[in-house]
Image 1: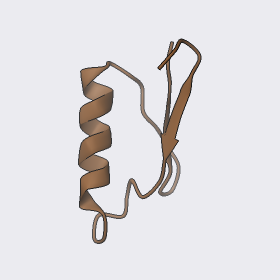
Image 2: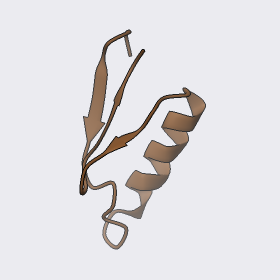
Image 3: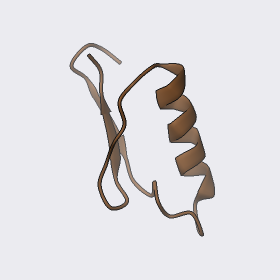
Length: 48
C-alpha cells in the first residue's frame, strides 16, 4: 500500500456470519502499524 493509499472492506462486525474478517483485519493493521477506521460494518486504513 503506497503512502496516501486506502484499503477498505466490509463485514468487519458481522461476527456471526464472517468471524474471520475482524480477526484478519485486526492482525493486518497490527502487523503494519496502521490506524483502523470503522463504520457500522465497514472498515478502512489510510497509509501514511
